[in-house]
Length: 367
Length: 232
Image (tube, rainbow over the protein chains, first blue to last red):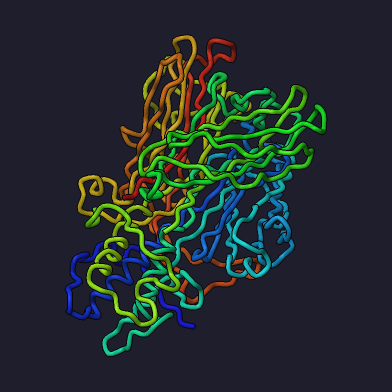
């Protein structure tokens, strides 16, 4: 096992046409190539999620798909008292973070969850003490390699149970994958060691050979790219807080609408089209539940874009009064240009309300 | 731009893949892989940073009062109102940036770390003005020192849904160099190699409605907000 430092943006451009027939590559050419493909796969992690103005106690959950070569997930909450008239006193926030793969859960009591997110009491400063203007930053990192030993797969759920007292609030609760600063040949996809191509060192097969350059190329393509990730407080009492739908034909979700029409999120994918369609493959899933109506009813959520084949819908979502993640649905996005993603929903018959407390749309590119 | 300007698919790793079993890469395949690397560096430099459902029925005026109808600075957005009390202010939190990979382009000269792009849909009722601003503070600083650009501010009087586009080119003035040394878990374990230098900035967006009146026909909406870094 060998690790070495990787400097972001070390090699963003290389002479692409330097290979010559019958001329062996030089050490410089190989290390340039390795440095460049490391930049492609390690520098720009794009998995993220976040919630803003968490004003009431409750639970938020985000779908999170790990980028295999990413090592750390950063969690940050910025806490403040938002009430302009709040006097000093007891305004607090507690953040209880857990991460699950749907079967196994790493609770906040686990050592992998950093301090600050273990349901401790954080004082929210009032405006007088900085309050909304700067806030208290609670920051911690999760080691994804360690988390991976407990959780299976790479499609996980990050949840935070927030407890608020007084006028405390979280301005933001966010998570993003940190860029990689190290190449590690013990972890598939985590870069190519530049020293593999040093002069007089034999370039052998995996893990030292040119195949590693191809592996890094592939991981640069499959790196997780979140397009939309939103969560709302998991509640079914207030139709003005969490998106919902009651119509028996596809229509806008309340709170994601534009005056009754389905609202659109402006997104842009990479220019990595699937060869046969010319569009970029994406996928999405939602966190849903029902309230009211008959337990025999079902619902659907669908997404529309400008790509061919739009829209794409979930299969019938079974009636449940527990918050449940839908299966992933494969869809498509226009390649390398701006697109507009619109969410709509329906229920099978009048009576029930379908609630959506999280949406995750991400690229699903393959090399 | 890379040599071919597109990603060239190739056999995936496994039996039959290029360079397998000690086979040297031929010049043509190697050229394709080299241009793939350059292309992916440029494509991956752009990423979405956040999404927000937005604000419905915001009505709070700028801190300058109801007569203010200009494109605002962030400091002209009232910070003490929440979405529940007619305000519209977003703290997108702290984000990291690298230099844009194409430093020789005209865009990269003014946007050394890429360009922040906020996209949304908005409208305002009653002939009032709705103003919007996207701003960035260096490091993790609060909104009082946040700066924007001319392209990061806008207004509308449209009573029908329209596109909102705000761009802030990130130069050195918007970000702060920071060491990122992840200390993982409760034990704060630090890895020997997984540490490096990034630029960081705290991103904000704010909106006002000149009516300052919470009644039907006097409010604005800014919905379905997406925030993206264009870094290519």
